[in-house]
Length: 200
Image (tube, rainbow, N blue to C red; front, side, top):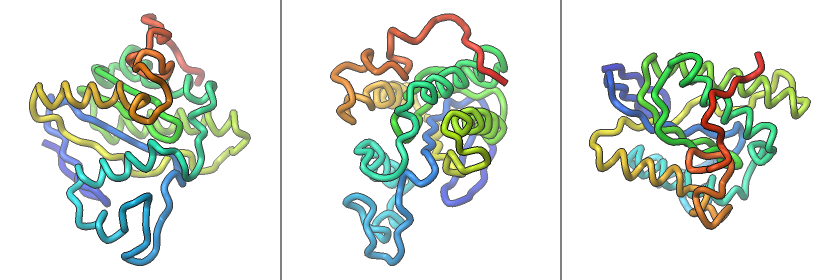
């Protein structure tokens, strides 16, 4: 069992599946004062919420995509992230991939890791940030928020709920009417079954 804490606690039992979410840098405001609002939640209510409740509150704000950058709407950048996710499984063997969705300002991933989460996330975020910033002409600037949300999946029923949550996220965000219509997720029929590569 690996455990560490930054703003959130991070529990990573050996062999457990992990639900990960990370967002674009600046995609949520940094409010000042306890009554400042993020969407319909106050900073005070977020600080008192459990990590799971805080995730749901913040994810609902991200899904509305009303704040901050939406760089993942660019098909070149979304494809870069999808290719990096597959690369991490097929070429690097860092994890078994179960589900993912690349949203306009955040990414959801359900995996069973084979290497420490910080190692695989540093690689995944690093290569996609460099390539995305190259597309955007933003060399050397922050692309991803530093800390990611992660949740250790306890049961097979929870695994199924999270899998469905990820693939239905584009539907709940009103981007498409069916999960398979979102081109940047594991539910999409447009994702190739082959082993894609990413540029180095």
